[in-house]
Length: 112
Image (tube, rainbow, N blue to C red; front, top):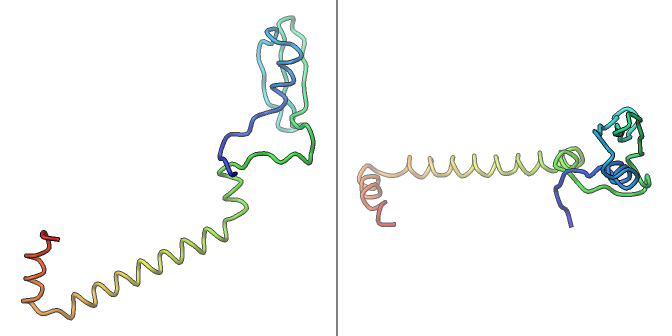
């Protein structure tokens, strides 16, 4: 089942299991894909952010857009075309009505 949630960093859990309440602060090192923790005694520890490269992370909104942008573009274009066709048909029907039919339609519109 597809759930859109922020990705949880595995390194946070590893460091919490190692050091518990002795962690002062944590930061994410994007260059090395690691979580770095500053401990109460001033030392630094780090943990990898991946358990296994084969582990499939949950989908996010950004990852869905990155993988399915062509499908979303086709669906949006089709809906735009259907909307434009409906508008052209409705203007065509209104243009072919006489003044009396338009007046009757305007008067009876609220009864529907």
